[in-house]
Image (cartoon, rainbow, N blue to C red):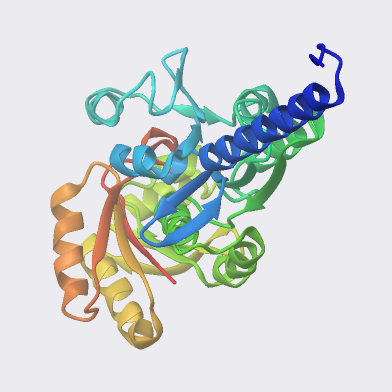
Length: 318
């Protein structure tokens, strides 16, 4: 007897077909939401940071890192760091004109826009500039509370750092993600790494620290006149004075010697500068006589440059 459309055989066939399709779609979904690196397989852990990490474009693309820019106000016009204003344009103007840019944090809406690009099932690590230097962390936290989604997980992390220190932390996260580590392991590593991340830097002109309220007008005047170069460092996420040295060259020597004492315990080291590539390279060469590992060199952009000024050089390590 010929079976009709509603026969038991046909119904079972339809059920099996739907089930098979469901399995296929599940496999496709998993494939597109996992990544292979060597022989490791890891779920979609996304990295979001702000523009003060100053990571190279090649790294941002390779690691698919999303960047939320801070803002620079120069001559009454707002610019998004890394998008509307290049380092060269900003520093050329600062060196040749009486221009002192100001900066501001991204809005919660800026972070919310990035959060909404996450795919279902994604887990995002949002690692940003120290909350004691900028309101960026608060914007990222506020955006997390405003996000009307339950299919993604977001961790907002205060780096207690910025510029090259923040970059070193993110590069460590990338290494762990590539090695197949899960989010819990990465967060545990960051908990240990953040208080160990150090930044020391020497400014060239005290005018920028004075305008930012870091030093008084008298200290700026006599400091510049006597060529006093304060060595600043980040301590628990805020800027403090490490030492005050006459002449920049002696100040740089001081941070090199301070690093020498700690070098046996250092895992990663990097150099940063604000429109001072030759001095940064000289510092890298001096450090290479002490430290045998690779030394990454990075230029800090206008947000950091606005507060410390062109000619600033420094190092970071953990």
